[in-house]
Image (tube, rainbow, N blue to C red):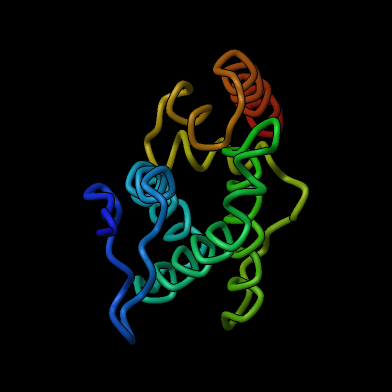
Length: 148
């Protein structure tokens, strides 16, 4: 009797080779990496430090990937991991930039006015709906305008 091998199965990784990542995770990284990097560059002007923070965030997301997929909003959970990771790196930089950790509206403004994303793209990145992003951006703009 011969053993049939499934031709669609991937071969095991060679010793020292990193294991294959799930296709969904690879697609998620491909989609979000440029936007995550742009966001990280705002807080971490050194390109290597920004790239390192994003890579660290993706590593953390990878560790929790299956759990994230089971959550009600995987994209929002991944965004929180990125924000937290970038925040940790800003605390290590010298001098640390002023950044209130509770200012989600500031992140939306950064993604819109600095990174150049439209409300639908921001909603996609942070895992929320477009109307919520648009409303918060309007409130932020009005709050800033009233302070001038």
